[in-house]
Image (cartoon, rainbow, N blue to C red):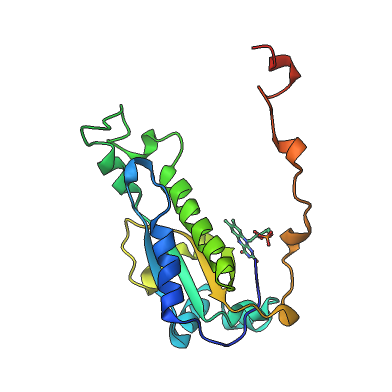
Length: 197
Ligand SMILES: Cc1cc2nc3c(=O)[nH]c(=O)nc-3n(C[C@H](O)[C@H](O)[C@H](O)COP(=O)(O)O)c2cc1C
């Protein structure tokens, strides 16, 4: 993640290219429930921060460089699109076409995550920096402020721009060691007791 950006604008074609990558992520049943709200004007970006931070919080916000990102992308999904898709005749699995509660794994969030990763990787490919961050309890306020329909979930926001390494500061989470390959891989089963099965 990059958390400090120069004030240089990002050409619209690059932003469009990243949205195009987002829509090419896999989705269960090709439900394609993704929408992307692009904020690429200073006043729009300012409105986002004003909606999610009080002036006092903003004034002492540690990641100053994040606030200068010229582009914010709000990644939006529509859970009901999956219910509708899985009610179609080629899917029709018990329950999945009736209610989101029947889904053991909420694939609308999984698939939105894949779209987010496409944007993050695509940004690096063209030399841009990006930071994904959660909306947490700001979801209703951001939804209302930008007119996003009630049936949508706001999965995350991505800040985008040209990296400014001199001003960047790692987040507290960044210093956590990455779990090793050996720690996460379970070959043939979870542990040795299951290897013979
Ligand atoms: C769902 C989600 C929410 C995140 N929220 C924040 C956030 O609020 N602020 C922030 O600075 N970084 C946020 N991050 C970025 C993580 O802190 C970052 O990915 C992690 O520290 C690893 O750093 P790296 O991606 O640079 O390797 C978030 C990442 C994810 C996936």
